[in-house]
Length: 187
Ligand SMILES: Cc1cc2nc3c(=O)[nH]c(=O)nc-3n(C[C@H](O)[C@H](O)[C@H](O)COP(=O)(O)O)c2cc1C
Image 1 (tube, helix red, strand yellow):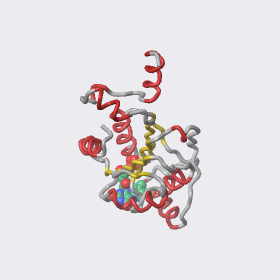
Image 2 (cartoon, protein in one colour):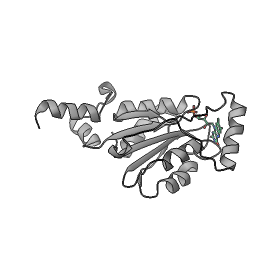
Image 3 (cartoon, protein in one colour):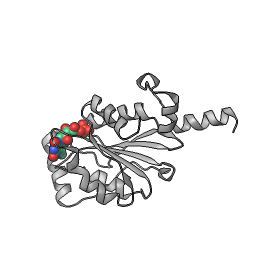
């Protein structure tokens, strides 16, 4: 391949690469993406998970997409808690407005969400059931008030039965996010 088409390929694979945040060698960078197409997805009601997703995206590159529901959740905390409780109890699948047409082209999908009622929000259940993640690498992360990441693991495991699921993290602390990405070989 000539250098300009290679360049094009690299930039379409790795967009928004934050070089100043990535002190590693170019060899490490290419190992990180190594022909793998990365997608960072997240659901966030109040912005915490969005911040974590943006940090991850800055560090690993790839594309980033917010998972949104057709019906927004109430902005009031108590009201939102009630709706979420109802959805969990009825095993609801809230309809998403987010559609990712080229999901097949991604190899590695980060999936971020707040812990709601000790699991992932039901919107994440809808999301993970909307695509075929077989053979793909799924990397979950959450934010929470106090719950451990592991509370959401049974949901992710049952929703992605044929995926390689890498160790997830509670991504509240930016420092821990960096350490975690290094640990799972994504930096
Ligand atoms: C409906 C609802 C349920 C929640 N349930 C839990 C929970 O079970 N455990 C916990 O530690 N935090 C819980 N929280 C707190 C959120 O997980 C936490 O604030 C998270 O960082 C919010 O992420 P976001 O800003 O991306 O929406 C809940 C919040 C809401 C709105």
